[in-house]
Image (cartoon, rainbow, N blue to C red):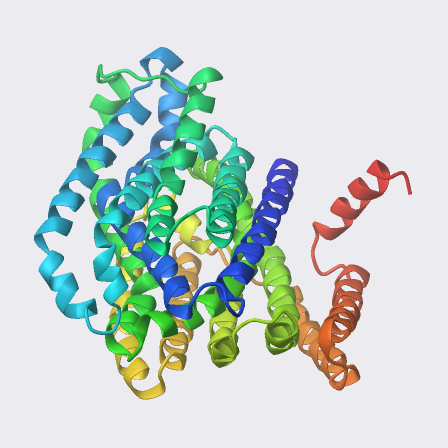
Length: 499
């Protein structure tokens, strides 16, 4: 657990540094007089559609790597390991098929988005280089996680990619980029750029090799690999579509769709801050989960499951409340467009969704690395079957609040199903009494912080509310020892700074 804890903490720090850069970018995108909500909404849709393209093209290659990397590593020398070669080749062929499909269905895109989101149609083909970059990066990221280098890929994706975005934003603001059209084209090339950096690093450090000769592991497990990829691919498509469907519905169905997608996108960005620790924990734990299943180490699986639930709930509840305390005040204080105030209610529902998702631990990763990975597809289909009609119907009735409510309802049911499955099959469950106490402390700390400084506005109000909440919430968690990882982290930090 100490290695998982250490890599999780380092990855989370890297991710939050990246979010700090990301918040600077969001500030530029949303500040009065710079970008319009429609332009910001277009960048958000670019990413969403590119992620869907990558999921379609990837053909479950990350799942293949996560599941079978221990077998390749155990049975083959590095120069005969053909895993990455096949993963990249298959992913590239898959993206070629996606490009052909995109060209074929261009008229459908025009019909669905032409009236409410015309700029999406104008720059449609520039989504493809962005999608290709995400596709390759996702495959290489899975490999890098499997060789226990999660911090590297988190740095590239969370910090370097956002810094590249910052650079082109600054160039646009100083009119060194002549138009928004040039800006969005350069934005589409940011992911291919970080792929190039990752490839150069892996090759130069000799941590990746390529061979087209089929190894004995590939020959031995090929039928299981194909079976895994078929089910995992379906599950990945379902999960990815469920993550972007709300933005697509907003852009296609609601009047002034790109502007409302931008408002909804700001709420989503804020909730992605809540989700940040999950990325670090998943990156650090995934290789250990695969190994635990291979060795049938059920106590280790239960330990990772429960620890991940407590720690992620602790972070999620705290960050959600901290942002909720200051969401509206920050929009006024930092001079963002008043239009973004409409996203607060959506943020609350999306934030609660993230708290539910993180608080239930690594159930998706535990199932995905087990021999019951087929259940990923079953639960994913249930998620999508709930989310798609709910999102469409509630968006029609409640505008951008509808998709947020649909997320909360469907994701909650989805996680309940996964928890029940793991308990029934393996007697694994994520909760302890600390889970309940964390929620109680978060609510009480919010109430005290809100009412103590509700009449204080501006930057001073944000600082005072935030400091009081951090002291109340963090102090209570530490005093009552609600997480078994808090004390070791504190002791390590105390020794380093020689307190």
